[in-house]
Length: 102
Image (tube, rainbow, N blue to C red; front, side):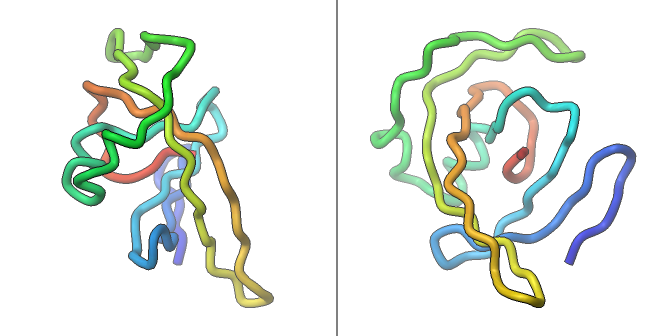
C-alpha cells in the first residue's frame, strides 16, 4: 500500500522478513535511515555497519552526522511480481525518520 504525503510517497516494504515503512523522496540525494530506528528494529546491526566517506550531511533542519552505511535487501510488493532492491543506506546518528528513506 502506498500513499502520497506532500512530495514524498510512503509505502510498506519487506526487509528481513518484517514489514517496515519506506519513504520515497525524489529530492533526496542519498538513501538514509536513522540510528534510533535501527536500534529499535535491528538491535545488533551497528556492529555490521560499513564505513562511510562523508561524515556529515546538511539538511533543512541543520547538520547530521553519519555513523556508517549498510546494505539491506528491500522487497517492494507489486501485483505483477515483487521488486527486489539492494540499496546502500547511510545511517545518520541524529536524524528523525521513522523508517527508511529512498
